[in-house]
Length: 322
Image 1 (cartoon, rainbow, N blue to C red):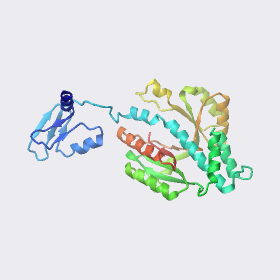
Image 2 (image 1 turned 45 degrees about the vertical axis):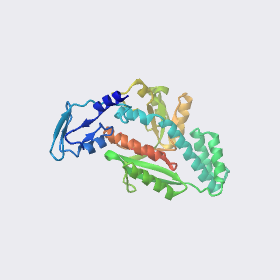
Image 3 (image 1 turned 180 degrees about the vertical axis):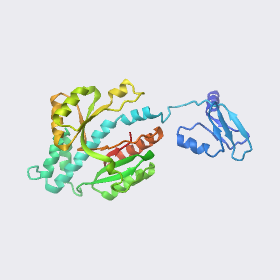
């Protein structure tokens, strides 16, 4: 074991013996690597690494081969895309059910549990049927609304700047506004974002109804025919990258974009055609234009969005990142 550690250390560490305070291992995080190397007056990374000490007292040049002893944390755009997609649909469905539950509670708090006399609850029940929400979620939240201390939910929108000029919109449905805004601000601050003034981000998005269809569940021409017949605004194809595998492509989605008036008709046509689909959470925000960023900014933005979505009060996070 001692011999193995010696070999690993030889390949993973650069040491200037004339200046014993200079010692570093290859960094996984590019930000950390740049921060460390900036303390030296110059360096080069062609066939090896050249370091000049700050005090200009020594110079050393060694050839270094990077040897990973575990899986790298960040492997570029493709792995980031795959990692971001894994579990995304399940998380989206969970957020949908959470939002519907909150809307049920609010409707019952305002007008009681009878949909005949409570038009707000009747509207939510129509959405429950439209979005195929499980019956037990409806029943559980009707009961929850009658519990002592349960308040109605209020919708809030927070606007955020991410990395690389990317904008985000955070949708919140909360029974405690002070709690929700404090939680969102804390996550944004901790993960390098910045809260934006109201209205400074929203104009970059448009609100629509969206139906998501997995590419393996439908034919493109069939979807176009259904969308045209039902009065949809657009059918958005999934982006294609040179490094996509067959697995990547099969996990992509078409998006049928619609107004609220034609949304139910589109769902009906898809059911008639036997096409599986995933609905939105009532509506979605689509960016009018998208912003392309480098791999590092993409990963940081995905992490920020992921942490925001972990908050119970947050129902959705939208971004104009490409």
